[in-house]
Amino acid sequence: MLQSTKLVLFTALFLVIGSNQLMAKLIGPSVRNNSRYTSPSPSTSISTSTTTSTTPTPSTTRRTTTSTTPIPSTTRRTTTSTTTTTTEAPNAYNHPKFHLATEKLNWFGAIGYCLERNWKLIVLDSEAIRKEFESFLTKYQLRKLPFWTAGNQLGDMKTWRWGLDGPKLGYTYWAKGQPDNYKNKQHCLKLFANSLQWDDDYCERAINFVCLKN
Image (cartoon, rainbow, N blue to C red; front, side, top):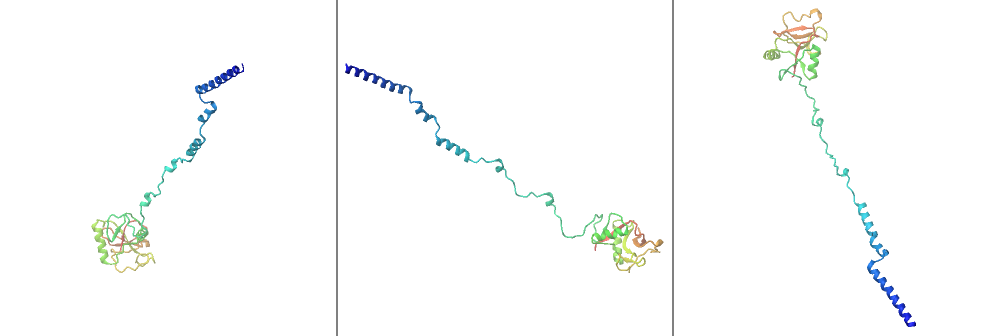
């Protein structure tokens, strides 16, 4: 009787153990064991975050280049000479010795115009220069115009000189009856039109003039 009971118990225990093993094979590993396969590895997570944070992203400002080479402007290409030279005013006739101004001025304005250019108002202190000047006027058909010369008596109102403080007139070519100092107001020397003889006239009168370059 006792042996029969033991045999029944062993048979039941075998059946229970066998059924558990069979169930394990059918349903696979438990949820606890599967958790290690579904959870992300800590090393993988660290590696991913490190790669993302340490990779520098180039900005657009770094790719933008600024040239340091100066761009020449039009003002830099324009050169200005610092050497003092004679200013060549507009002149209808390019002559190496005589400069005919294209404007009419009084005697004082004519003196200043020539001096500003390091020249002087025409001086006819010899027959040679007078004839050379007359040839210039004849060549360019200018004899029909009156012209100022540097002659004047403004210093003491009686002594004729070349320029304001120049030498006295030695050589002269006055027209007949000149100088007459009409109304005691004619103190500057001009050339008559056509004949080109000398005449005294009002210094305030605006007429043509010629500068002597040398």
